[in-house]
Length: 106
Image (cartoon, rainbow, N blue to C red):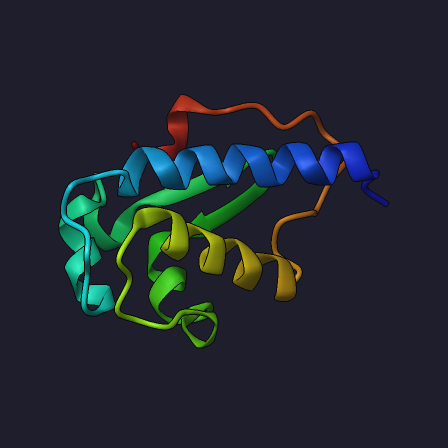
């Protein structure tokens, strides 16, 4: 079981990675396809937190039911993505220390 501090740290790491990608003056965005140009490797971009890998394409497929486009700010989008990842139980798979990884293809 992952303790609360590890969960908070994992969420913070993922939020920082999403912010690094989506903190762009492109906002507002009307639909998910507007986000693809912001992804360093397009739909093949992968976000990593500890041993958890979240492919960017899951943002538009698996977690889409948690998103309500259009978005006026990246913060609103990131909040909804985090909710989706947490609700689907995809953020907390290990008790490893969560560190920002340069291998996330940003």
